[in-house]
Length: 156
Length: 156
DNA sequence: AACATTTTGACCTTCGTTGACCATTATTAT
DNA sequence: ATAATAATGGTCAACGAAGGTCAAAATGTT
Image (cartoon, rainbow over all chains, first blue to last red; front, top):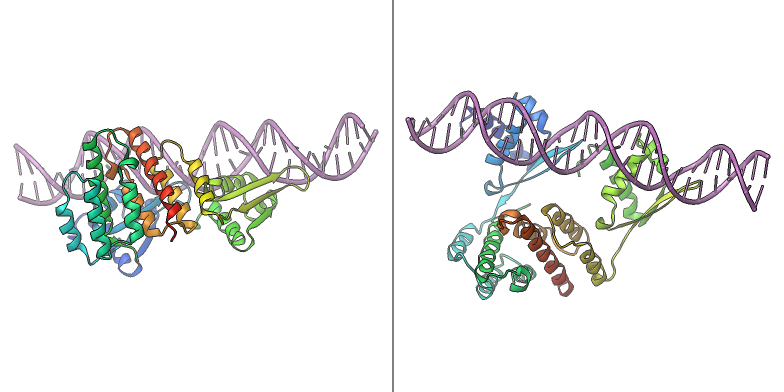
């Protein structure tokens, strides 16, 4: 967090507010003007410092009265567990394998039974409807990985 | 719900009334005057915020004593509601369209916010990771349809 | 020098606002 | 009755106001 370049300064500024506020709504051009940079720099800062992987959720709206809203997500305490599960996922996942993972997650209170059934339906053979078995299983793996990563963070 | 622009304010005003009344009949020019905007802006608000996809039914009459009536649809029968949503799904669904459906489902207590976010992640561009845009949107439509059908047998 | 990060700006997409013009219904005058 | 007129709401296209994208240029790091 070396406050040398503008991006770092803007990042620090936003994080300072988020330390107290937990959600912030900004006007892109205003911030850009305030820090004497072009508007698209704000997008750069958000993309590199406030992405989902870093624990932030960003929404925006264009047009008159537009805004960019940054929300701080809270790191869930089950990340080690998620990491371990991710290591177990191969590049292809069958329906049976998915079932086992989902039961695992449900058994450990990481998802509800309803959520487990929901994902099972979304990722089943009929729903995906892909001719190539290999492609289907690869996609199912993607879905499972996405699910696990989404569980890393939770809104408060 | 950032109440910056007039459209948002008018939307909030109408929804506040609809929260208690379930049906509201307005005079276009009166509302326009009340919020200091041109009459056609009311049409814009209705078209973008009170359309059928968002669960509203709108009727109007021109001429002397004309009106615009906005009715909030309530769904006593879940299956009927799901059928109606299914009819609105085209064979291809974009991320934005999915977002609208999920908000709709969440707004009507059909799914939790967490489930909505979960599905959004599972069905996003990056997760599906399909080269053909058309195939991606078709698959997203399948996922949405599967979700809706799964809700038939799963109540919160 | 080679590579990575940051900064800029041209161009794009989406959303909101406005006003001119159109369509329908009710009321009034003939 | 019929025709004119007033009173509504509807449509649409243009414009302005945001934010988004992307690649080139500049700067920093190793």
